[in-house]
Length: 372
Image 1 (tube, rainbow, N blue to C red):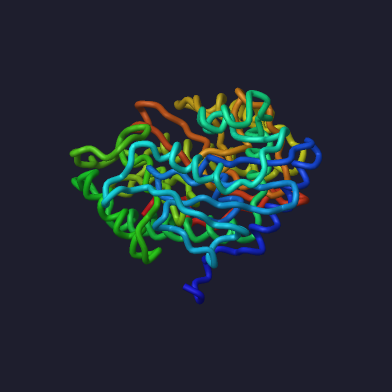
Image 2: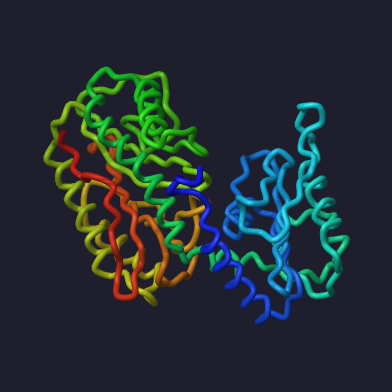
């Protein structure tokens, strides 16, 4: 693993720890407790599979305590000053009370009980609330905001996840023909992603239905003339990919389908010409919505996009229900779509971008074109 280019970057983790420590000092916090798996990985590099309950603590001196399932404890691998394990299994059987067991070990590892503590309210658990009182500062908004800024090691992981997407889209253009079963497409794309990454995926989704806006694969055959929306994502060691392409089954487009595709290309060009630090995500959504409202037939009635990282949906939110502004370091998707029965049933194109100091950079995922 020492030659693994995607191994944990301890220096990058230490940089995130220093940034969180600065926020702690600003808020007057003596201790921060992290109990969300994604937050623990962001801080220490430790990816833990679902069903388990890692935890981490950062004190005002910068000391990091990491709690992991006992089978994962390896102090030299992760970016922490102290790594301790909790019993996640008894005689090979998973325990029900994972969070309780993890929190008890965390509390035993802490030498002090400070008065001013920050934590993630939605997943702290009653034990930590009881130990530190009801005055724990909710640090979730701060952590979500900090996670938006992607460091080079995170971009490396996200780009590697997209290597799998690139391989899946290339294969999809080869195998999608009238008569292919959605389950067969799903199986072959999963295999392509695993073969590309050379290891098991930590996530696989999301839309695999033909002649539909999306959903899991069905025992159904693709029909000539339908549009096949593939909105694909994998997990690579906890980091997600998420982008979409639309394939014309049989390779022939109607004039309406071709026009819809061109309209969505215009929407993506509008994103690229507009985004820079300080721009309103809501305003961009409204501008794209206005652009696509004049296109027909077809309706655009979902979000324009969202951030991606250690969760499939993060900030920034290109969505009228939020009022985010773009910031340098944001990694986000833009996914305009047009849907109508005359389009058999619709088209969605989704690209990934990184916000730079002067604008935005499109990640190279593969050809957007629908013709094979």
